Image (cartoon, rainbow, N blue to C red; front, side):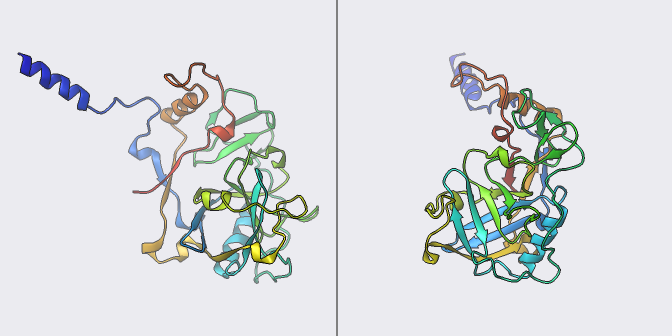
Length: 285
């Protein structure tokens, strides 16, 4: 009898925890196409992988794909690291010619004509009337008429000058600080860093002009190469998956983000900023 009780206790201790309502099923993970992945390589084997958002900024993303195919960024640099704001890369001289077929002044792709989110966060967002997630793994904000990708940590945007400039996509930035949501709908968001953000956020800060520019050319961080994953040898292609949001399990995950549980959290917040509920992604197994 005692032996049986000990065996039962051991089995209970060894059993995996029961899945929660917010846990995904294997089928909830969807592959990200290789043509949506931009791979930037820096020195010392550092690699940054960005998911592009062609549905939300089709002309800018088409430009970025042409720039990558033309090897336009190879040998260029990261020339701006603004503390608690952005890391920016491209042609620091602003003199390099764009490849054939790249549109110098795309349309202002700052808005998406409809809000097709499949989830909605509980709390009202100070920069929009509602926030949520698209089925294919993007954060969204809306004012009830149009929608947009918000400036959350790790999101990638197109640097530009004053209007009418919209930025060609040759100079890009990634958010590395508190979400600068005041930039929403003023700059085209074209993607999100999926892996390697630490290689950008840990760079020395620039000091020039109050904008985080590197004062000396020697401070700039060389870019070895930028490629679409679809142009790399198959064995070298990074593979990622996003978690589909159009199911009850993802809805439960959102509620869990809005109401963190004990034992660490003693007081549930009852809501979340969209940038604290970024859609999960993972390396494909």
